[in-house]
Image 1 (tube, rainbow, N blue to C red):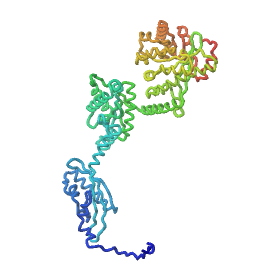
Image 2: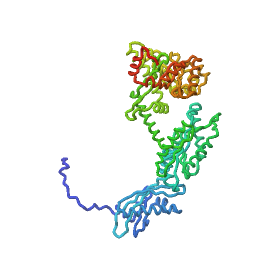
Image 3: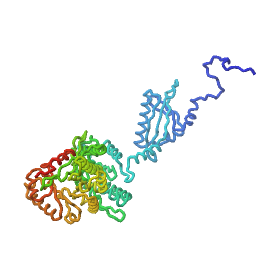
Image 4: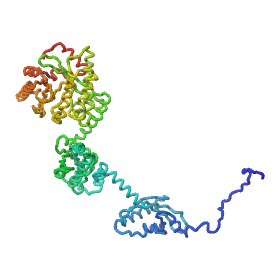
Length: 584
């Protein structure tokens, strides 16, 4: 058979007229409209619009079940019908080809939701405009969304709103409730004290049970319209409408205290719940609720320290923001070596010799400037940064002694005192820290003195005792700082391996003008002598004070009269200048 290329096949001109088919191939669309609508899997209908009236032309069975045969009764459903007609009429007048919207109506089993679409059908001469309407039942999807949203906005343990849900509840009440002209709202923040101890001693199940019980009791103290939320692990908050300002808030606080006054039974134990309460009041209803919540949380932090109900006052939030900035910058400073130690001389009051230095942390920050130790140490204790801060100070002090020895050519006859925070003592392995500091620097233990306060011993006497004896095993001297301001008893003082008592500056600095303080200082010196302890007096700022303490037999002193705290290099030069001898 002879082959032929397809390129050579003859091609004729195409006709613009469609090919004719057999009769019945193209159905009459108008006559079979019901069949077309019935083929659609969703609710469908065709409407006509004439003389500003919407008329149903045809609907499938799904439409009849969902809309046409549905009994639309009640004022709410009448409003929904009117709303639907307004949406359709607005679309018809808009000139757009299609539109979509959602409608909600009350069904027999609750709210029903339909996603509706409407589109224009081709115009036909001699008849009114027709529109294809479809609707998809989204009730089950909306129910799932609602449940997921409820879980997102709720606390899974107590079923109360969480922090996000609390904000939405507040916004809803501010927007939709009727508020008198003089009304304001308040936030009451509640922090459960010692909650972590319940978790540690009884386990997390007991902690959860405690939270559930507290939530129920707090809910019982609410008034109508108040909102209770769990906004943190052991933190609750209440949104309250205050028609009478602060008096309403204090009345709610009283109800809270009464609700939590009786003990809660957990397992075989009865636990009394203590809490810190802070309040913040809005100035008017336009105040940002999130800002008021932050103010209440700032107030509750103060309440945790004061033990009383605290009302937010101007400046507290700025203080909290500064503490947060200090914490953030301090974390960076510890990681990047941004802190330094300053050294204040300790002078032998009988001979004038320098017996040692007290190491004091100093911080100059690029953004914050010079930050007071009183300020950043308090933040470090609150945030947990006191552990790395204390470790850095111990290692740096020991290394400074090692550098001084290397510069002098032999071991200097001086030591360095390092302060210990009660919180560091509770959380860190302090004995191991000092052992490492001494080992890495090659310095003898008797040249590094640990200074601790009375409160550190009182907080956990057994743990403090073990620590002090561990430090004595390292040959380290131990000084009790700020002596006279705490509550230690003589029996515990006698039983602990303490070498030095440091008289607090509040007794020393104004001693010459106050006979009572002279009596206190003499008593401490007499007590120390009977216990074979040495005494250091802080806050010596005049020569008269130095001479008076010298006559009383005080062993050692420090203060601005001798020198302020100085850098490592300046401290070495200061010691070398006074090395031979100098009288007080």
